[in-house]
Image (cartoon, rainbow, N blue to C red; front, side, top):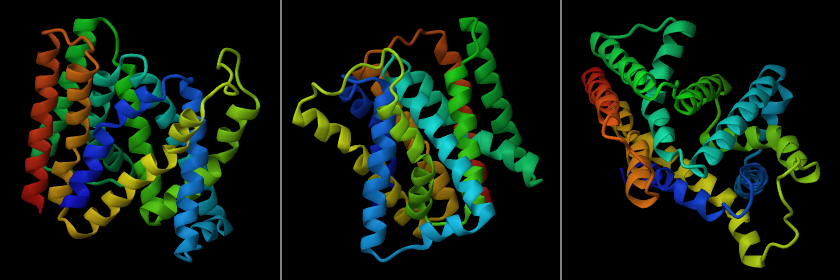
Length: 280
């Protein structure tokens, strides 16, 4: 329980870390996250004499899955970093609230899984919440939906990859390393120059590897021992902490009308959690 709760709390306060790195562009942060996640995770795995993650690339199917997973998580990381550093932390939290329901939908479509009655109700409530936000704001919450769908697809591919959390992260970041290097070697116009950064700034950027891997490791340790229903409920700690960070710390605007939409989302979270506990 300590490991699982710690992992979700660390993920929840990540927006503060990305804001700390806002002295460089989101794409540069993404680059450092890919490169130093690979460095840190591969170091841990190799020190533990674990080479299973490298052998994944010997299997053509798993190599393709690792490459797809690397591309999708790079997109998800990049969008998330850009969103929280441009005043969209609350909208990002909405994405991670509805992500489990996107995963349910993917399971329904791809694996022909069946939903119980409560899960259908939870899905309908979440859809109503998104619809209300769209109608009240006049725009589709594309950041929320893109984060939810990309992370849902990422989880789907990880399920097929059949590797531990750190092993799959090592394989994914190895597959994505050309993206990370390209963003440094061939920077896009307007990204800025990194040559004038202080040693402290470089250290903060290099910490992306630990910041990425530590909560993932803690989650893996907790998920091994906890019931599915408990993990399913705890996962909503992350978007809840993100939401509070956005409102209370980062002072992002949250119009009163949004409470109606988030009310449906929060209701769907409660119903979904109850459905897991009933199944457990």
